[in-house]
Image 1 (spheres, rainbow, N blue to C red):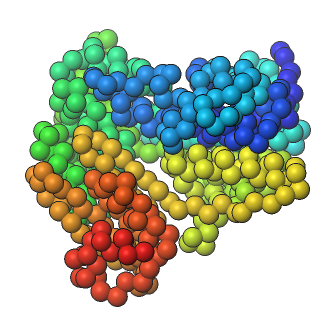
Image 2 (tube, rainbow, N blue to C red):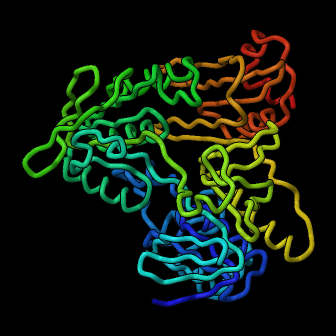
Image 3 (cartoon, rainbow, N blue to C red):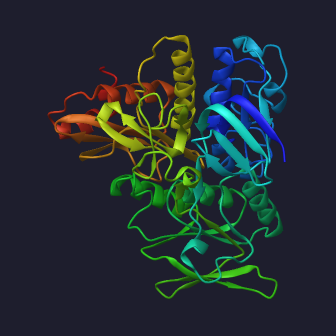
Length: 445
């Protein structure tokens, strides 16, 4: 059992780890100072690709094509980037001898002694730790759902999950799939499966899809659009069991309302949980995550937490919040590294000032949302699902101020002012006038 020591250690190998590594390089980390310890077998990659182009029958995304940091328009950091020396692209980022320790699961973290222990008994000492462990999926087996351990029931969190689903799509060509869940994953995977000529049925208990973000008006467009693509939607019920054949493959989904749906493939997307169990009782937690300040410092000296696991001060709304999204994973990781070097150099940086941002793409649809989705709502634009020129959105107004903005099929030139007004929070006096003005309201500022 080996022991290794580093000045900086990032535990977790997802998007946040990759963007943190790039920022470490920008800040001048020295060879041998930084290690990334990841359970995955590949270098950090842009995880959103898994529910989109990774599953497409044509124009398929594969590594090394979507290693970080291409998702934000940056250079692609190939595995050799972490260990070699030189420059990359026009950014003149120096390779700095980063230790990329893959296929290594950390099973114990002792923050008092600054020691991590792997499943094979290897130990890693650090001076500064960045917790970037991300989230894991909620599994139906967690709730004892009968038959939930059948073959061809899939979850999508990492590239291995994606590979298994791709293989099933090929094996069960032109088969039937049931997608359990009506959120991000449910909508994106239903579209991807349909593009593969799979017969798709979505099942979710809520009255409409994406209820954490969508209003009933927004959801009506997407549900009708999907129905027009011949995707079946079953609302107001849940899966309570699965049938299987003699070799253990799923054959059907049993619903609480008594219906039974045939299925060759089942994909489950019912939420995630932040991976914080390694640090329970050692660090202050709040709202389901590890509590941090505006620099992502935790209650333990020398320990930072970023991405899905961090509960941080959201300055714009003067509250603590935990955000599960790739945009925040990227930006929080960069902020933490900047804060580490500022502390070491005796300088200061601004506190994290994040504007919540979410997006999704499926079929030929593409939406973006900025801000907060509370208060009164105003739907504007052409939201007819059969329209060839559909473009619509919603504004959220609270206490007379616009605090959230959603736009479907916007151009980059239109999405930019939508983001701007969500941060500026302009006053709104006439909701009817706002609905009439639509996108043009945002361009005033």
